[in-house]
Length: 357
Image (cartoon, rainbow, N blue to C red; front, top):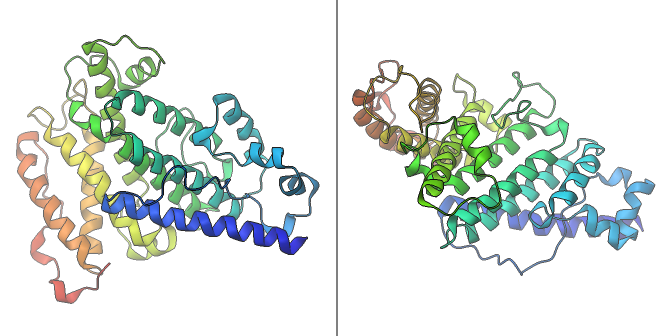
């Protein structure tokens, strides 16, 4: 019986590992996914290690199909009531590689559905729908892997490489904020709307209502708030990185082989956001419809330092740095951004001096 359970778990994990790889390649390359929504009805992977399969509460997942369907249902397919019930169950699960895999797969399924469906005629309706689903997923993250502070969706990862489960927290955080960016990216150009005179958080709360009035003002405010959420997600993603670049930190703490995608995804969002800001020093008070300039500039500088540092080991970050550096130095003067503390392209290694991603 134990062997059958192990084979059952191994097959589920194999399918979801293939799915994760497909999702990452789709997100990074922008190509259409080969995995259709109806291709598989596989449930989420079991969030327990094989050593505890004999426990009565876990045994029911194998013996009771109703319990298995209920417990291992994708957040994407859950109602709010079902998601709330899942919160207490996942909280009772011990932190383990299997629990982490369960969470990351659940998030990837949401991200893949966003890629497949959000860019449609009813784009606002789709963004509202998936924003609520991401909120449900975030509420289900077990305490051991929680990466946000209380009453906030900003990154709050403890310092120190030896913090327990820090690698898992960082991986989940980067994946979550990357998914948020994908969802809200179509609204990014609306962050400068002058109709937005209240705080971004108030706008998000107002426009999370299921049936807002379908007028142009409401749509503009909604897109402005989602654009700001995109920028805040980019800032939070970069906040997961240490202030001082360290290539060894990448290999120890992050999914190193697609960290460049995450950094560039967030950097591109912030550069687009800064390009839409009205001229003036970045120290000016926050303009309605724009994020805090001090934090935004600080994080974009951090991203540039990381790209520059990574360029000494890999060729791709060097190319990315040159492109971003060119854009940033064009827009910085009109915004009063001081770039004197940033490295430039002159001391970057040549292509032959580095390895490749």
